[in-house]
Length: 608
Image (cartoon, rainbow, N blue to C red; front, side, top):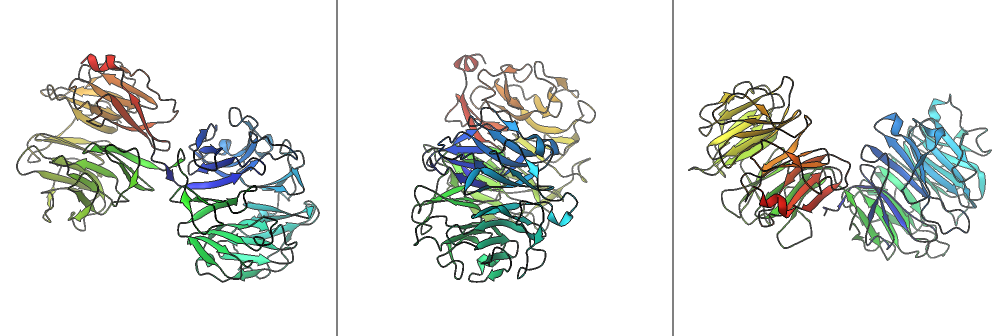
């Protein structure tokens, strides 16, 4: 159910069918059949921990098969890096043995024969003459300056001439790899060459994008001219894309994706105009509709232009590239905090909206139905109208980064608790006066978890936790259920006030009058997240382990897997929640896949 958008890193289009493929920040792969109006996730074995650097449709001559394509991948672990091919739209994949353990950064097809493909890898340039079935390295293995190869391109008139971009300037072979020459005359020394692109309609013309800006050569790389027509175009340039259209009115168009936005030149790079303000990592045009342009952005997902770049609109329905840290409910609204910003879905709406505290890491319901607090690393925020508008309020000054937030709203006056890397502070909401609070055993460890209920508050670092039952006047250290355990979350039972803890070793119970933890029955001894009690059924509790959701109908003493749990997502659920106005629906956040919702079986709700 979103939020859609986020960071996109690659977008490409099939030359005959206009099918689109795109990849998100975490190696997730998406496909669109309707010019980006809707996207569907495609399975990929190295997703979530990998980065897709290039996508290449298998465009064999006269073929309209858009279910076959190649992915160039780098991975957190060498075993996941390489070149992957599917012939059935992601149902099955085959990893090329020649690239096992090697990161592949770039792919290019020779325009005159799509069976001829070049790949840039950690250890050099590879060539295939049979559509990627077999590969041979054609660059020397002992030439360090020609490694890694992060961009490749063919001379459009000669398949034996191949250009390679590296962190050590560009290189060229004229004899299919037998000899290589560094071609950098006119280029700033030690430029990282991120992309290379020939102008298909102007033989000999070649563009390069680098960390030092944009370059053009009119003699196949012998000499380079730094293009200075735009300040932004002189910044780090991720991708260069000369328009491949055969129409003379478009053949001088060049697009550059930079940290300063998407730049467009109408005169071969002499002058430039910024046509989109956000940073762009990839850009491509439709082969069937020359003025239709697609771009992958760092903050706004995927965008499309139907007028050659004059205007753009987002096309993110189904595409998800966010890195999300937490899911929260307040005022019957959903809030998501993530590395790409914060978003909210308000009642009676299915649309996610970006909200002002963009770097917020938490949201917290206030003492009135429409009051919501939020915290970022260095600021506190307050909304008095359900999250639609926000204002910054005083935070503990010069006290390190904020790490957690809690509110005791039951008593008078209400107390707001703010944990920072410098310690714990208490104050009144909106007041500029903050009091430092000493908590035993936690003075030297950042507090990462806080839970407040009635007059009680729990604070915890990874390995220590303390509880106060008198609004912070006195504190007692909580015992560890198991040595080496880490605390993940706490919840008080609404029925008899016993405490349930989610930990790195499963779920535990602590009776209100006891001092020893009891393991909960039925829940594996694994890292548990998202612990909470249902707002309308006081004995019903939920928690998550990996992609499974567990529930308890006896206040957390025993647990079983929720029917229809798992939600077909093979990734760890980070947090769970329920919107009070929708008590039969549970919401789950998977950090690198999005927000999911499922209905709770009526039989489960009837048991507590």
